[in-house]
Length: 418
Image (cartoon, rainbow, N blue to C red; front, top):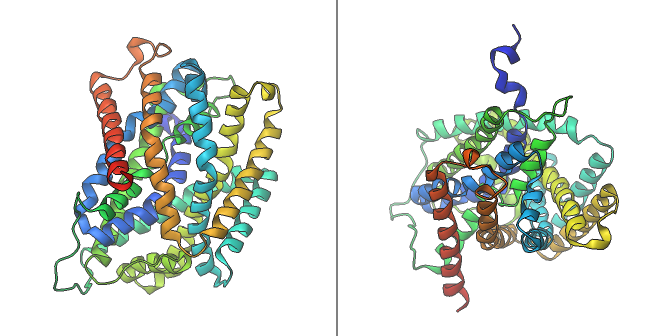
């Protein structure tokens, strides 16, 4: 009996792992670890809460697609011209910043891996050109297969490091460690940045939708809802678990030690890997460094490919004269825009990774309430039959998420700019 016959859900595993590969990046390796290092376990609830309230807004990408056999962008369009324009403008306005951010973190790990001494923006340019060549040669699928196993390797290493970190003899300061204060502007700014990409920008639900569409079998059938949701939940719950692990690792190994993460990409990467080796042993340094690099490279490659794809699709929907334009031509147009735009941003932010990461994640958090409303309207809209709509508790969770995202965004803007 084949494995697929005994465990039929395995043959439908794919989009959820792609989602995990894209999500386990800056939000996890950088922001979650920083949260633990700065505030200890103080923001653990925030990480769990952020993943919980955003669940409906990502789940819609799979559910809508399986039920309607269409892309989530069709769901946007079914609500009128305004939602699809909102998605287009948000994606175009943030894609260069997001790609620049994930590439900068990747370059820090790459610099440590090969011992390179290059200007950050120049090294990022090399990485993006390499990504462009991979996509042009069609080698993404083969590399993606490798990435999944690399993410698994990093996950195993993280679990081991976290387990050992509880017993590590890390010198702590005698004074109390920093605690989060809701009235402190700096703490609020970090909180917003932490939740902005936790677990990933909400527009990534459209990527999940398109990846699900690609899981059609030879007869053109999509996976059964049961198995598609198992796949999605594995990816979503897995990334949530890893975010918690990174926060615990940062807390156990760095909180209240007097040591802080560097704002420079290369130095930060070295410090991040050092957390693992301090807990596990110096022998693990090259293994962790390679796993962390390929994990971030996977995120960079996925974002660099996904944004031009969904924006190309949106372009044909919002700008009439591009309605019949070849989708592949639009894809290569937008991928060049993303690449050049990201390099320009990196050139001006080359000296401070922390500032770029916080800026990018904050922008995503402020966009989140708008996209959350749209996703709620799609999830509980006319295209989803009543019997297929989520349970009332999911409706309640969705509204709690919307109200929180709007309320906290308004609070942040008020204390920051008013």
